[in-house]
Structures are given as structure tokens and as C-alpha cells.
Length: 65
Image (cartoon, rainbow, N blue to C red; front, side, top):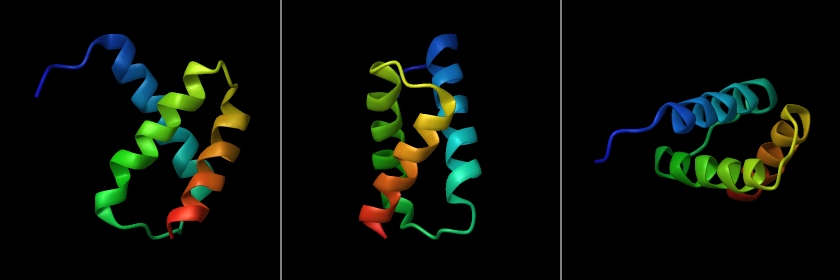
């Protein structure tokens, strides 16, 4: 596995923070964590703010639980 750049680490931290804020207590399959991060990266690439990122992640998680 390739080492993450500093920018990638910051993006992952942003996704993790948004996920924890909006999906706390929601159980998802461990195999779906990569899908959540992929969705978060897509949302960030569109330029969303943190609140919208959290809302988008929650909407995505609701489709996989």
C-alpha cells in the first residue's frame, strides 16, 4: 500500500470527523468503511463544506445499512 500524502491524511481526517459527527451510533459493515471514505472523497472533490460533507455521508450511510 502506498504511503498517504499529508493532503490525503487531512482529507481522511475531515471525512472521519464528519462521519463521527453525523453517524455516531450507526453500525455499518466493516467492509463498507472504504465505500464511506470513497464517497467522502467524491463529496470533498466537489468543494463541499464540513456540514454538507456530514449530511452527504449520512445520506450515503443510510443507503448501506
